[in-house]
Image (cartoon, rainbow, N blue to C red; front, side, top):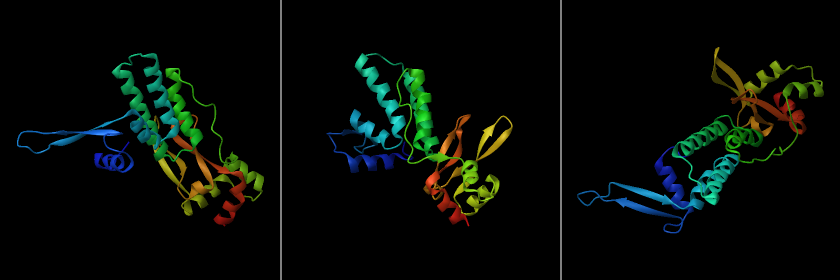
Length: 212
């Protein structure tokens, strides 16, 4: 979840209390100098670190952990390793593709459903989300989606990313930080590694004015 151990340690010491939320174990080699420090976290402390990343994915983790603890079942290390890998991948995809909550939920379902764990059916969006093609048609401005995307790219509102496919590298569009003021990145139903920008209906007129 953290790029460097030092970053995780800094967050741990900043947000938690030693000996209550976590304990440190100093390794003492020959010569009297400490070689390293290991950190042992309580369950609640560990869960906090996960929930700060991707909440729908955290819900999957919580259900896996507590379902196992409550039923006193032993989950094989291979299964736990597989779940951990899937959660890490979902975390990376959510951040890399700037996914909205609905798309994060779709990723969480791919982890939870094979384990027989429940997830919400939907997450309400901030507003009605529609494609640029549909909203341009409603606005009647005589602009097609291709020209719209060109203007969006010129403004820095969208960027082009690539993913591997059986035909080579495939390009797809993703809203940038500035573009996310006007819409959300929806995961492509055909491939979770690809996004489809959707736009807020009540902000689209303002977006068109911004694009000129």
